[in-house]
Length: 313
Image (cartoon, rainbow, N blue to C red; front, top):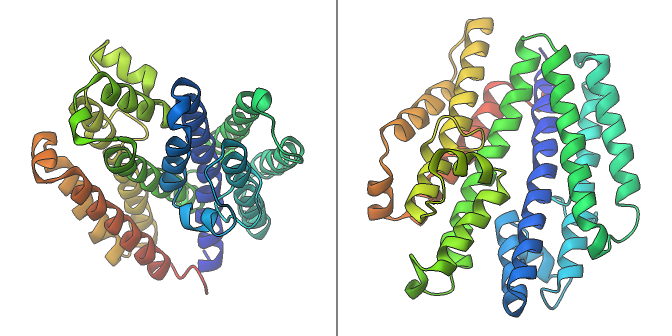
Protein backbone atom coordinates (compact mmCIF):
# COMPACT_ATOMS: atom_id res chain seq x y z
CA UNK A 1 0.00 0.00 0.00
CA UNK A 2 1.17 3.52 -0.75
CA UNK A 3 2.16 5.46 2.37
CA UNK A 4 -0.13 8.31 1.33
CA UNK A 5 -3.08 5.92 1.27
CA UNK A 6 -2.18 4.53 4.69
CA UNK A 7 -1.99 8.06 6.06
CA UNK A 8 -5.29 9.05 4.49
CA UNK A 9 -7.09 6.07 6.01
CA UNK A 10 -5.59 6.65 9.45
CA UNK A 11 -6.42 10.35 9.52
CA UNK A 12 -9.88 9.85 8.05
CA UNK A 13 -10.79 7.75 11.05
CA UNK A 14 -8.92 9.94 13.52
CA UNK A 15 -11.01 12.92 12.41
CA UNK A 16 -14.24 10.92 12.58
CA UNK A 17 -13.42 9.84 16.12
CA UNK A 18 -12.57 13.44 17.03
CA UNK A 19 -16.04 14.53 15.87
CA UNK A 20 -17.61 12.18 18.35
CA UNK A 21 -15.24 13.22 21.13
CA UNK A 22 -16.20 16.87 20.59
CA UNK A 23 -19.90 16.01 20.78
CA UNK A 24 -19.43 14.14 24.05
CA UNK A 25 -17.37 16.95 25.58
CA UNK A 26 -20.00 19.52 24.64
CA UNK A 27 -22.75 17.36 26.08
CA UNK A 28 -20.84 17.04 29.36
CA UNK A 29 -20.22 20.80 29.52
CA UNK A 30 -23.88 21.47 28.78
CA UNK A 31 -24.96 19.09 31.55
CA UNK A 32 -22.50 20.59 34.05
CA UNK A 33 -23.56 24.14 33.20
CA UNK A 34 -27.22 23.28 33.73
CA UNK A 35 -26.59 21.68 37.13
CA UNK A 36 -24.10 24.31 38.36
CA UNK A 37 -24.93 27.60 36.62
CA UNK A 38 -22.76 29.66 39.01
CA UNK A 39 -19.63 27.91 37.72
CA UNK A 40 -20.72 27.56 34.09
CA UNK A 41 -17.78 29.59 32.78
CA UNK A 42 -15.31 27.29 34.56
CA UNK A 43 -17.10 24.24 33.16
CA UNK A 44 -16.81 25.51 29.59
CA UNK A 45 -13.17 26.48 30.13
CA UNK A 46 -12.55 22.89 31.24
CA UNK A 47 -14.20 21.58 28.08
CA UNK A 48 -11.88 23.74 25.97
CA UNK A 49 -8.91 22.42 27.94
CA UNK A 50 -9.98 18.82 27.36
CA UNK A 51 -10.31 19.55 23.65
CA UNK A 52 -6.87 21.18 23.64
CA UNK A 53 -8.15 24.41 22.05
CA UNK A 54 -8.34 26.90 24.92
CA UNK A 55 -5.52 29.07 23.57
CA UNK A 56 -7.08 29.17 20.10
CA UNK A 57 -10.45 30.09 21.62
CA UNK A 58 -9.01 32.96 23.68
CA UNK A 59 -7.43 34.43 20.55
CA UNK A 60 -10.96 35.09 19.29
CA UNK A 61 -13.09 35.45 22.45
CA UNK A 62 -12.84 37.28 25.77
CA UNK A 63 -15.00 35.10 28.01
CA UNK A 64 -16.24 31.53 28.32
CA UNK A 65 -19.86 32.07 27.39
CA UNK A 66 -21.77 28.91 26.56
CA UNK A 67 -23.00 30.03 23.14
CA UNK A 68 -19.53 31.12 22.04
CA UNK A 69 -17.80 27.95 23.27
CA UNK A 70 -20.40 25.65 21.72
CA UNK A 71 -20.23 27.47 18.39
CA UNK A 72 -16.41 27.37 18.45
CA UNK A 73 -16.39 23.61 19.09
CA UNK A 74 -19.15 22.79 16.63
CA UNK A 75 -18.91 25.18 13.70
CA UNK A 76 -15.82 27.41 13.71
CA UNK A 77 -13.74 26.56 10.64
CA UNK A 78 -10.79 28.41 12.20
CA UNK A 79 -10.78 25.74 14.92
CA UNK A 80 -9.13 22.64 13.37
CA UNK A 81 -10.78 20.45 16.00
CA UNK A 82 -14.34 21.73 15.55
CA UNK A 83 -16.87 19.15 14.41
CA UNK A 84 -17.30 20.96 11.08
CA UNK A 85 -13.54 21.10 10.49
CA UNK A 86 -13.10 17.45 11.43
CA UNK A 87 -15.86 16.15 9.16
CA UNK A 88 -14.43 18.22 6.30
CA UNK A 89 -10.98 16.73 6.89
CA UNK A 90 -12.45 13.22 7.23
CA UNK A 91 -14.32 13.52 3.93
CA UNK A 92 -11.28 14.99 2.15
CA UNK A 93 -9.20 12.06 3.33
CA UNK A 94 -11.97 9.65 2.29
CA UNK A 95 -11.90 11.16 -1.20
CA UNK A 96 -8.13 10.72 -1.27
CA UNK A 97 -8.42 7.00 -0.47
CA UNK A 98 -11.80 6.36 -2.10
CA UNK A 99 -10.56 3.36 -4.10
CA UNK A 100 -9.43 1.70 -0.84
CA UNK A 101 -12.88 2.01 0.73
CA UNK A 102 -15.97 -0.07 0.07
CA UNK A 103 -18.76 1.76 -1.73
CA UNK A 104 -20.86 1.64 1.44
CA UNK A 105 -18.17 3.28 3.58
CA UNK A 106 -17.62 6.07 1.06
CA UNK A 107 -21.35 6.71 0.70
CA UNK A 108 -22.08 6.80 4.42
CA UNK A 109 -19.06 9.07 5.00
CA UNK A 110 -20.33 11.44 2.32
CA UNK A 111 -23.84 11.27 3.84
CA UNK A 112 -22.32 12.05 7.25
CA UNK A 113 -20.64 15.14 5.80
CA UNK A 114 -23.83 16.34 4.12
CA UNK A 115 -25.97 15.70 7.20
CA UNK A 116 -23.61 17.54 9.53
CA UNK A 117 -23.24 20.44 7.11
CA UNK A 118 -27.01 20.78 7.24
CA UNK A 119 -27.26 20.42 11.02
CA UNK A 120 -24.42 22.89 11.60
CA UNK A 121 -25.30 25.32 8.82
CA UNK A 122 -26.44 27.86 11.38
CA UNK A 123 -25.74 28.58 15.03
CA UNK A 124 -27.24 25.85 17.20
CA UNK A 125 -29.77 27.00 19.80
CA UNK A 126 -29.62 25.58 23.32
CA UNK A 127 -32.92 23.77 22.91
CA UNK A 128 -31.65 22.05 19.75
CA UNK A 129 -28.20 21.18 21.08
CA UNK A 130 -28.96 17.69 22.50
CA UNK A 131 -30.56 16.62 19.20
CA UNK A 132 -27.62 17.94 17.14
CA UNK A 133 -25.08 16.18 19.37
CA UNK A 134 -27.08 12.97 18.99
CA UNK A 135 -26.97 13.34 15.19
CA UNK A 136 -23.17 13.69 15.27
CA UNK A 137 -22.78 10.44 17.22
CA UNK A 138 -25.35 8.60 15.10
CA UNK A 139 -23.62 9.58 11.87
CA UNK A 140 -20.26 8.42 13.18
CA UNK A 141 -21.82 5.14 14.28
CA UNK A 142 -23.10 4.60 10.74
CA UNK A 143 -19.58 4.97 9.33
CA UNK A 144 -18.21 2.53 11.91
CA UNK A 145 -21.00 0.08 11.14
CA UNK A 146 -20.36 0.22 7.39
CA UNK A 147 -16.64 -0.22 8.02
CA UNK A 148 -17.15 -3.30 10.17
CA UNK A 149 -19.79 -4.76 7.91
CA UNK A 150 -18.25 -4.30 4.46
CA UNK A 151 -14.45 -3.95 4.68
CA UNK A 152 -11.95 -6.75 4.21
CA UNK A 153 -9.80 -7.46 7.27
CA UNK A 154 -6.62 -6.44 5.49
CA UNK A 155 -4.06 -3.66 5.80
CA UNK A 156 -6.69 -1.07 4.79
CA UNK A 157 -8.92 -2.07 7.68
CA UNK A 158 -5.98 -2.09 10.09
CA UNK A 159 -4.99 1.49 9.29
CA UNK A 160 -8.63 2.56 9.79
CA UNK A 161 -8.68 0.95 13.22
CA UNK A 162 -5.29 2.36 14.20
CA UNK A 163 -6.61 5.86 13.48
CA UNK A 164 -9.74 5.27 15.57
CA UNK A 165 -7.98 3.92 18.63
CA UNK A 166 -5.03 6.32 18.60
CA UNK A 167 -7.47 9.24 18.65
CA UNK A 168 -9.68 7.60 21.27
CA UNK A 169 -6.77 6.89 23.62
CA UNK A 170 -5.54 10.47 23.31
CA UNK A 171 -9.02 11.83 24.08
CA UNK A 172 -9.55 9.64 27.15
CA UNK A 173 -6.16 10.60 28.56
CA UNK A 174 -6.81 14.34 28.08
CA UNK A 175 -10.26 14.15 29.65
CA UNK A 176 -8.86 12.37 32.71
CA UNK A 177 -6.07 14.88 33.12
CA UNK A 178 -8.37 17.89 32.84
CA UNK A 179 -10.70 16.39 35.46
CA UNK A 180 -7.99 16.10 38.03
CA UNK A 181 -6.46 19.54 37.59
CA UNK A 182 -9.23 21.76 36.23
CA UNK A 183 -12.66 20.46 37.17
CA UNK A 184 -11.78 19.91 40.81
CA UNK A 185 -12.02 23.36 42.43
CA UNK A 186 -10.04 22.58 45.55
CA UNK A 187 -8.07 19.78 47.16
CA UNK A 188 -10.62 19.94 49.97
CA UNK A 189 -13.29 18.57 47.62
CA UNK A 190 -11.52 15.25 46.98
CA UNK A 191 -13.86 12.45 47.99
CA UNK A 192 -16.79 14.85 48.46
CA UNK A 193 -20.18 14.69 46.78
CA UNK A 194 -19.02 17.41 44.36
CA UNK A 195 -15.93 15.40 43.47
CA UNK A 196 -18.01 12.27 42.84
CA UNK A 197 -20.48 14.16 40.63
CA UNK A 198 -17.59 15.46 38.54
CA UNK A 199 -16.11 11.99 38.16
CA UNK A 200 -19.54 10.69 37.16
CA UNK A 201 -19.70 13.36 34.45
CA UNK A 202 -16.32 12.16 33.19
CA UNK A 203 -17.93 8.74 32.67
CA UNK A 204 -20.68 10.40 30.66
CA UNK A 205 -18.16 12.28 28.52
CA UNK A 206 -16.66 9.01 27.28
CA UNK A 207 -19.95 7.13 27.02
CA UNK A 208 -19.08 4.87 29.95
CA UNK A 209 -21.67 5.78 32.58
CA UNK A 210 -24.00 2.83 31.99
CA UNK A 211 -21.23 0.24 31.72
CA UNK A 212 -19.55 1.48 34.91
CA UNK A 213 -22.84 1.39 36.78
CA UNK A 214 -23.54 -2.09 35.45
CA UNK A 215 -20.25 -3.34 36.87
CA UNK A 216 -20.08 -1.30 40.09
CA UNK A 217 -23.60 -0.25 41.00
CA UNK A 218 -23.89 3.10 42.79
CA UNK A 219 -20.28 3.06 44.05
CA UNK A 220 -18.81 6.22 42.51
CA UNK A 221 -15.20 6.92 43.45
CA UNK A 222 -12.25 8.61 41.83
CA UNK A 223 -10.13 5.48 42.23
CA UNK A 224 -12.76 3.18 40.74
CA UNK A 225 -13.54 5.41 37.77
CA UNK A 226 -9.89 6.11 37.00
CA UNK A 227 -9.15 2.39 37.10
CA UNK A 228 -12.09 1.73 34.78
CA UNK A 229 -10.96 4.35 32.23
CA UNK A 230 -7.25 3.50 32.40
CA UNK A 231 -6.91 -0.22 33.03
CA UNK A 232 -10.19 -2.05 32.28
CA UNK A 233 -9.78 -4.16 29.12
CA UNK A 234 -13.55 -4.47 28.70
CA UNK A 235 -14.22 -0.75 28.36
CA UNK A 236 -13.89 0.31 24.67
CA UNK A 237 -12.59 3.78 25.52
CA UNK A 238 -10.15 2.84 28.27
CA UNK A 239 -6.47 3.46 27.66
CA UNK A 240 -5.67 -0.25 27.99
CA UNK A 241 -8.36 -1.28 25.52
CA UNK A 242 -7.34 1.33 22.93
CA UNK A 243 -3.60 0.63 23.13
CA UNK A 244 -4.25 -3.12 22.97
CA UNK A 245 -6.24 -2.60 19.77
CA UNK A 246 -3.51 -0.47 18.20
CA UNK A 247 -0.99 -3.18 19.10
CA UNK A 248 -3.22 -5.87 17.59
CA UNK A 249 -3.62 -3.98 14.32
CA UNK A 250 0.11 -3.28 14.11
CA UNK A 251 0.78 -6.99 14.64
CA UNK A 252 -1.47 -7.78 11.68
CA UNK A 253 0.52 -5.29 9.59
CA UNK A 254 3.77 -6.85 10.78
CA UNK A 255 2.54 -10.25 9.62
CA UNK A 256 1.17 -8.96 6.32
CA UNK A 257 4.28 -6.99 5.40
CA UNK A 258 6.71 -9.44 7.04
CA UNK A 259 8.50 -6.46 8.62
CA UNK A 260 8.82 -5.42 12.26
CA UNK A 261 9.07 -1.66 12.68
CA UNK A 262 9.99 0.57 15.65
CA UNK A 263 6.31 1.45 16.14
CA UNK A 264 5.59 -2.20 16.96
CA UNK A 265 8.32 -2.20 19.61
CA UNK A 266 6.93 1.03 21.04
CA UNK A 267 3.31 -0.11 21.27
CA UNK A 268 4.29 -3.42 22.87
CA UNK A 269 6.14 -1.46 25.57
CA UNK A 270 3.01 0.63 26.14
CA UNK A 271 0.85 -2.51 26.41
CA UNK A 272 3.24 -3.94 29.02
CA UNK A 273 3.26 -0.68 30.99
CA UNK A 274 -0.52 -0.61 31.23
CA UNK A 275 -0.80 -4.34 31.93
CA UNK A 276 1.59 -4.03 34.88
CA UNK A 277 0.09 -0.80 36.24
CA UNK A 278 -1.89 -0.71 39.48
CA UNK A 279 -4.31 2.12 40.13
CA UNK A 280 -3.12 2.66 43.72
CA UNK A 281 0.44 3.09 42.46
CA UNK A 282 -0.70 5.47 39.72
CA UNK A 283 -2.43 7.73 42.27
CA UNK A 284 0.50 7.49 44.70
CA UNK A 285 2.96 8.57 42.02
CA UNK A 286 0.55 11.16 40.56
CA UNK A 287 -2.27 10.73 38.07
CA UNK A 288 -1.25 13.91 36.25
CA UNK A 289 2.31 12.71 35.78
CA UNK A 290 1.11 9.28 34.61
CA UNK A 291 -1.26 10.82 32.06
CA UNK A 292 1.42 13.18 30.76
CA UNK A 293 3.69 10.17 30.17
CA UNK A 294 0.88 8.34 28.37
CA UNK A 295 0.15 11.36 26.16
CA UNK A 296 3.83 11.66 25.30
CA UNK A 297 3.92 7.96 24.42
CA UNK A 298 0.82 8.29 22.20
CA UNK A 299 2.33 11.28 20.40
CA UNK A 300 5.63 9.44 19.90
CA UNK A 301 3.86 6.31 18.68
CA UNK A 302 1.80 8.34 16.21
CA UNK A 303 4.94 9.91 14.76
CA UNK A 304 6.64 6.53 14.54
CA UNK A 305 3.70 4.99 12.67
CA UNK A 306 3.76 7.89 10.20
CA UNK A 307 7.49 7.34 9.64
CA UNK A 308 7.37 3.54 9.50
CA UNK A 309 4.59 3.48 6.92
CA UNK A 310 5.69 6.61 5.00
CA UNK A 311 2.43 8.52 5.32
CA UNK A 312 3.66 11.50 3.33
CA UNK A 313 5.33 9.69 0.45
